[in-house]
Figure 1: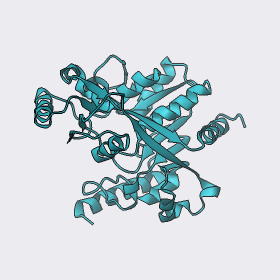
Figure 2: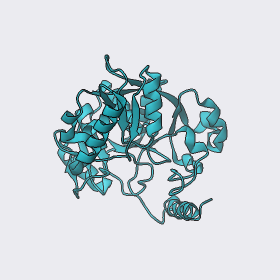
Figure 3: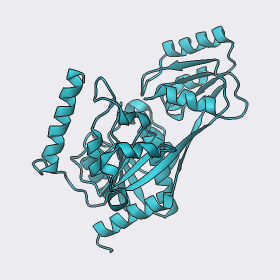
Length: 321
C-alpha cells in the first residue's frame, strides 16, 4: 500500500473509532435525517440515486429538503440554492438537484447549521443528506451507501479512490450495488448476515441520448468519465472523439476552443455531454452548437421496499410505531 494511502486509512480509522466510542458525538437535528453516500470518491451514481429516491418520496406525498456541502462553490455559510444560480455560488450537483427536483436544497459547510436553517424556513418532514456517509458530525436515522465495482479492489486516497474501508459498511442500513453484480456481495464480510441486518438492492444505470445524434464529440468532467463513454456507446452512439476533463470542471474559453479543434479534426457534427457538465458550461453552452445532453436513468430493484424501510425507521424515530 502507498505510504500516503496507509496514512489516510489510519487517520480515517482513528476518526471513526472516536465516533464509534462516543468520544466525538454527532449533533442531532429535530427532523429525521436520511443519508445517501458512498465509500469512494464519485462515480457510484449518487446524484441520480438521490434524484430517484426523492422522486419516490414525492410520490408518497412526503415533504423534504436536501442538505449538501456544496462542493466546488466559492461562497461560504448557509445558502438556499437558487435554481437560476451558477455553480460557483452553490456547487454543480446542488444546482442539478434543485433544478430537477424543485425542492429546497440548502448548502453549508456545517450540514447541522444547514439543517437548522431548513427546519426554521421550510415545512419539511425529513432531511436528505447528500454525500453524507463520512459526515459523522451530523446524526442520521438511515444510512444508504452506494458501491461501485472498483470499491472491492481499490486503495485509499490519494493512490486510490477509497475514503473508507469496506468494513465501514457495518454502519449502513441499506446497500446499493451495481445491477448484475451479485457476486460482489460474497466479497463483503459485512453482508454475511444481510437478511438479518441490512437491505441489499441493485441498480441499473442507463444513458439515453436524444434522437438525431450521430458521431458527436462526447465530453465530460465527472469522476469516472470512461463509464459515461461506455454507456454512450451502449446507447448505440459511435463517438467521433471522447474528451475528458477533471470532475466538477468549470469550463473556460480555452476548453471550448479545444472541443472545436477536435470537431474540425474529426469532422464531428455535434457535441454530447452530461447534465452536470451542461451546468458547468454556463454561458459557454451556446458556443457548442448543436449540443445534446444525455440523460441518465436509474432503475432500482424493489424501490417500494427501500422507501418502506426508510419510512419505518422514521416512524420509529418519531415514535409512531
